[in-house]
Structure formats: structure tokens, C-alpha cells
Image 1 (tube, one colour):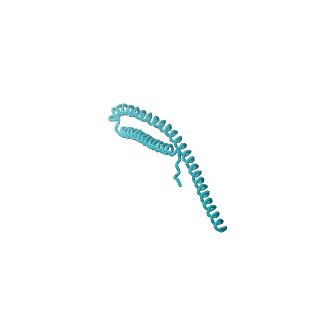
Image 2: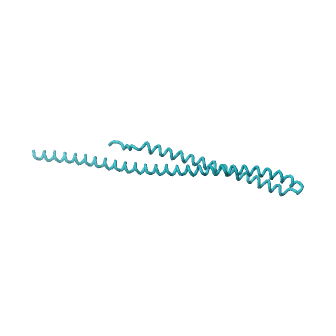
Image 3: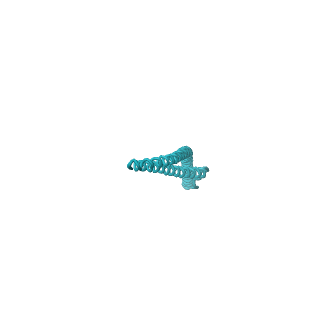
Length: 151
């Protein structure tokens, strides 16, 4: 029996590989978004701790520290806004990548279904051919046996 060969096998392999690459890209995007969120959280926590420390100081030391803190806080808030902008861009990229991933996944699933159907047809054709061969061998054996009985 000859081996099953599907003409679109290479396309299926390429589609699977593209899906794997998109999944890896999604994982990298998610990791980067998480890293930026942690950085935003760390910077906000730093500001909160500094504010608590400043509030605990006596009034004479607190007033000059407040001016420094406000200047520092403004700078940190700008950095946080920049990080949140990066997060928004990465989330948009992630959404686009997710759409591409879904299309690749659908294409792969369609190709896999087509392959399964083609392989099933192939197996049925092979089974029919083998049955035909078996019937032919049985018919020849029967005719030979009939001819030997006549002689």
C-alpha cells in the first residue's frame, strides 16, 4: 500500500509555524506589558512611601521637603504617563497580533479538517481497492477449482 500524500501538507506546516511564532510574539508582548505595569506600580509606591515619610516629619522640615517632593512627583508622574502610553501601544499591538493569531488558528484548523477528510477518502479508496483485489483472487481461485472439477 502506498503512503498517504496530501498536496497541501507543506501549507499546513507553514501555517502551524506561523501560529507558533504569533503565540511567541503574544507571550513577549504580555511579558513586556506586565513589566511596564510593575514599573508603574513601583514608581507609584515610591511616591506613596515618600509622601508618608514626608507627612511624618515635623513642620519645619516638612515645608522644604514638600517643594522637593512636588517637583520630584511631577517628574515621576510624567514618567508614569509615558509608561502608560507605552502600555496602551503594546495593548493595541497585542490586539492586532491576537486577531492575526485567531486567523492563523482558523486557517490551520480548516487545513487540518481538509487533511483528515482527504486521508479518510484515501483510506476508503485503499480499502475498496484491497477488497477488489481480494474478490479477484477469490474469483480466480473459484474458476480454477471449477475447471479442475470438470476435467
